[in-house]
Image 1: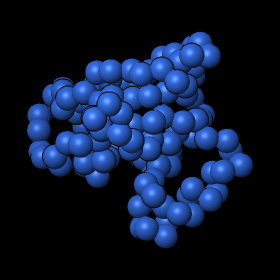
Image 2 (image 1 turned 45 degrees about the horizontal axis):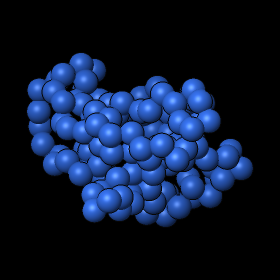
Image 3 (image 1 turned 60 degrees about the horizontal axis):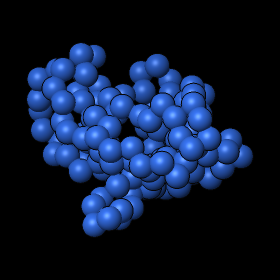
Length: 116
C-alpha cells in the first residue's frame, strides 16, 4: 500500500481524506517522453494510486513484476519525476539502501517498496 510518505514524495500533504479523492497530478518523464497530468488519487481501497504512463518512446510498456524508480527532477522550472525500470540485478542494493534509511515497506499482498 502506498503510505502518506509516498504522497509527500509526490508533493502532496499526508492528510486524511475520503476514498475516491483525486489528490492532483504528477509530471512524469519516462523513456524520453513527458507525461503531464498523471493523476494521484486516494482510491476506493484506501491506497494512493498513481496513474502511470502506458507507453514511452519505445512503445507500450508493462510494469508487472518490474522494479520502478522515481527520481525527483527539475523540468522546465517545475518539479517532475523521472520514471525508470530498474534491472533486477540492482534490486538488492536498492532494498539495502531503503533498509538503511528505515524506509523499506511491504504491501499487504507482499509487494515490496521503499525510498532512498
